[in-house]
Structure formats: structure tokens, C-alpha cells
Image 1 (cartoon, protein in one colour):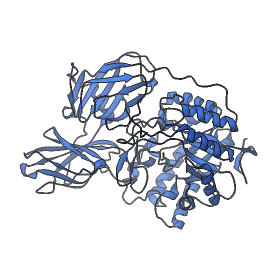
Image 2 (tube, rainbow, N blue to C red; image 1 turned 180 degrees about the vertical axis):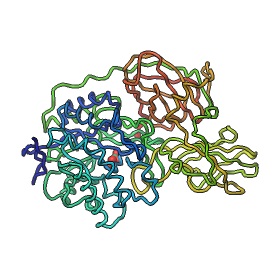
Image 3 (spheres, protein in one colour; image 1 turned 90 degrees about the vertical axis):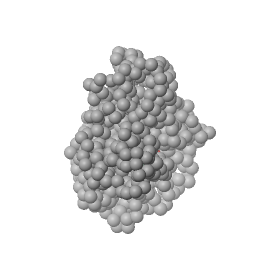
Image 4 (cartoon, rainbow, N blue to C red; image 1 turned 90 degrees about the horizontal axis):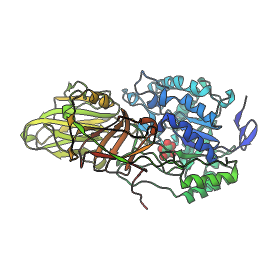
Length: 591
Ligand code: GLA
């Protein structure tokens, strides 16, 4: 059987020095029918390895569920990596960051009273043990030592950037993760990764584990920093940031190809191994995006294009060619080049039917009564929306909440009166001065994936007050948006023929025929903020705040006849029309 080891100077594959030229490709951000296509394009760029994280909460949305099927079939993904003639690196967390909801940590776990996230704490460690028991056999049987593609497995993720536990506690936690990993039969080398910073590199690893660094420029200097902490063995950049992620309300990030190519050349010429982060970014489908909060809450956009060499819709870019040319100087690159994708079908869709959300009475689960407003976590709603209700009087005049996580459409007797918004620190709103039913439709816009705020609950946090009193006697319930298209299929829709403006919150529906299997780009010009489904699949969030201007619709979701587009619009639309356009629009850039 093949071997893979960390030598005195190099990685050793079957005892021969081996330079890992890897690219990150997250199976959870790509439609499973397109995995093989993306992997082939990685191979044709000259990559010899594919790296993927594993998001724990993607496989385990509820404590009793562990799903490894369909788009969660990590085993099939790794088999396709092997079929494409490449190796694999797996980074199972338990924390992954990755701009993913909660950094992969399940909200059902952070909701457990007293649990210590990313620490040696019995409840946390027991849950990780259960997770590794279910996940790691899939990886173990695909290790290079057993004839599979997997070369290495990561322990934790940039742990040196997290927390202030003293060194013995940190090491105890990392060693416990190593033990849990080894106990599942993982025998290939284990490693840690940290930002190329002395303090982080010294806090994030263990002497017995191989250290790697994360950086996107100044390769020589960063390799020298890493060398101070990893005195022997190969130097590897585990995340070569050749692009960056987008957050709602900010510009679309671009990283110039020439600089990326130059820095990659410097790294490979120095004999370093690399994992391009990302080779292909993909999409934050559904409600899977994370968020940052360093004083200002910034949810991650739906597109995770990342300005990567392979674009979100699988097209090769100028950066692909630039990086392929660099790799060609250092390692064998296949002669063949991928075909450019055909322009996507372009046409308009009329959303001819609609249903005000207030009339979709069965969408919220049955309302329950509470003295004080519960968090979404207390209702066991781990993502999406919840509806809160209580009565107000004319003299209440203003609504003030301790905290809103993350955004609420506020309504009085069904009429929208404004928005509470964490992103702009808006936690007070004037109310029309009359008695009535106050409703808050609260959106969790993505759980924080980096820093001390990971694991915090969502929804209405703390107390809600008015000019005269604290609001009590709440009713609240999760809104079952996962059921929206199926629920709507059985409803008498209102006929919305005519293309005039539409008031939200509202569900709208349109039907269209198209080219089966072709990728599409959905543009919702004139729509404000909400969610979009195609044939029952939640594509993700849209928002006029940008930058993402089109939502990527993977071809496998589309058939020739009778495709259904459903939108949840929270605010209002300028017209009842959606468009499919030829090419993606990822938004305005800073340049
Ligand atoms: C860090 C993390 C990654 C990702 C990148 C930014 O390096 O390790 O998971 O969040 O930052 O894209």
C-alpha cells in the first residue's frame, strides 16, 4: 500500500519527496451532479490534491440526525477526487470558520446550558466524539494507506486565533481531538493551520503535530515565520488566499491575478506546498452562510465565488490561466483546457401568483405563549425566521429591544411599520399610536463564524420595552420556510396578473420553461430582500444591498417544462418580474 509521511525536509509519498499542489473545493458549496466537472477542471489546472472542510452542522442539523447522503455524501466526493487522479486533504473541524453558518458548529450544541465551545469541556467533547464516530470512518477507509486519496487530516482550525485559555488547557483540548481522530482509525499525518503570525502559530498547535500557515501574499516572509515554529519538515501554506469572500452591503472583492501568480510562484519555487483557498468557491446555498461581527455585524453573501480561479458557475477565468502557467513551471500540467461554458438562457419570468405572508397562516408553527420573548434557539429554530407577537397600546409609542439578531420586519395589525437591524445597530422604532397586534418577523441572517461571538443565540434577545412598560405576554413560533414551496402548492394563490409593484411580506410564484440542465443566473432587479426557490430548492438569500446581483442556479435543478420560481419578498418589489441573464453579476467592486 502507498505511504505518505512527513520527512525531515519534505512530504514523502511512497518515500519520495512530494510537493502538494492543492486547491480548496467545498463539496457542500457545489451541486453534487457538478462535483466531477469541477474536479476535472482542477486536474486540468495542474492541481494534484483537493482540500475540503467538513461542516458538522451540515451533516447534523439536529442532534439525532447524521446525514451522509446526496449533497452530503463526502465518501462519494472523495471517490470522485480519486477518479480524477488526485489526492485529498480533509479538514473536519469540529470548527471550520469558512464563512459557513456558525463556523460549522451546530446551534443545537451551543444551546446546551453550560457547554464550552472549542474547549476541553465534557459536553462539547462528548458531542465531538459522537460526530467523529459517524464521520471519520468515511475518511479512514479512503486514506492513502488503504489505497484511497486522503493524504492528511487537520485538527481544529486556526485555533491560535481563538480564546484565552491557558496553554495547558489548550493543549489538553487539541490532544483530546487528536485522540478522538486516531480512535477512528485515522493513521495519515495530522496537522494544524494558523495565520502566519508568531503569537498565533505558537498558540494554535502541538509540538507533535505538523504546523502549516494561512496567508495570501509575501510568501517568502511568511514561510520564514512558519519555519520559526516548524523547524523541520515541509513548509505548507494551507490557505493561500487568492481571493476573498463577500459580505452583504459591501463591495465585491477581487484579488489581482498577477499578484496571486507572482506570490504562488515564489511559494512553489521555495519548495513550499500549497492549498489554494479557494480553487473554486461555489455558493452559500439555502441558509448556510455565516457572518462576521467585529463590532459591526456583517452577514456573508450568497455567492462564494471568492474571485477564485474557477468561477462560481464553473467557468475558467484569467486567474485560472495565470495560475496554471505558474504551476506548469514547477510540476506537470495536462495539455487539455476546459471548454468555456455556453451563455446561460436569458428571458423574463412573470410572477403571476402571490400570497401575502400574513395569509399564509400555517407557515409559522403553532404559536406558543411566553411571558418574555424567547430566543430562536429556545424555540429550537436553528436558522431562518421566527414570528413574535404581542399586543401594544396607543401610549406605547416606541419599541426598544435589548438586541435583535439579526433583523426584524416590524408590523402593526399586519402593516409594516419599519425594521430593527443589528447591522446598523437599529434597536428602537417608533410605533403608530394606536392599540393593535404587534408582530416581528425576525431573520437569523447567518451565525457568526469567527471570533468570540460564535455560538451566540438568535432572535429577540433580552427584553422588549415601550415608552411606558416592558412588553410581556408574547406568542412566538418558528416559521417553517423549508416547507414554503410545498405549502404553497396546496394554497389558493391570488392571481397577480399584471406586472405592477408588489407589497411585502409576500410569497410570489411564477412558472417557466427553459433548457433542461443548463446553468441559469437569476436577477431580481427591483426586488428588495428575501429568499428564492427553484423547483423547491432554496437557492439562498437575495438583497438589493448587494454586492451579489445574480443568484447562481445550477443546471441540474432545471427541467424543460413547468419550472417553478418562488420568492419570499420581505419588503416590496418594483414589478412582478424576475429575469434570467446570460452571465453572473457579482456586484460593484472597490476598484
Ligand atoms: C481563515 C479560515 C478560513 C476562512 C478564511 C477566509 O483562514 O481558516 O476558514 O474563513 O479565513 O476566507
